Image (cartoon, rainbow, N blue to C red; front, side):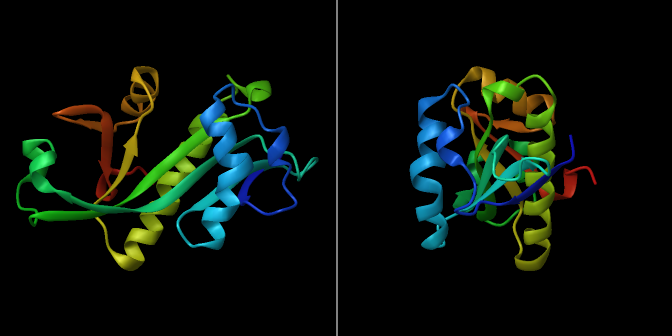
Length: 164
């Protein structure tokens, strides 16, 4: 399987995507393209070169509102300004037919590295994730994301700590 991540386009068969989460399916199928046209977020899809219109997985990146450093873990907040800029990994999902093949990890690292490249151009402290539930939060913690002290479903990773 020769996979690659590309921006979502109208040729991608988003309607066939099923990650077994109705909210994530609906976002990809009905909202992602609208958000792109309005420059609200950007969605990237994982495809196989042998079936380039089939969506195996996706993630969405967006600019995040400024976060007060008081929300961050205290050790991380030291020497930071009052408000912290960053990007959000707003959504990430893999089609049910290809779950368990490491594609979620592949998408996560692609998204983290893409966000780091953007931050290198425009600035930003971290990539943030708003996990949907405890299982999703555990997935991100396995890769080094740190939960907020008062909200364990909101996690972050400073761009300086993203592995290359």
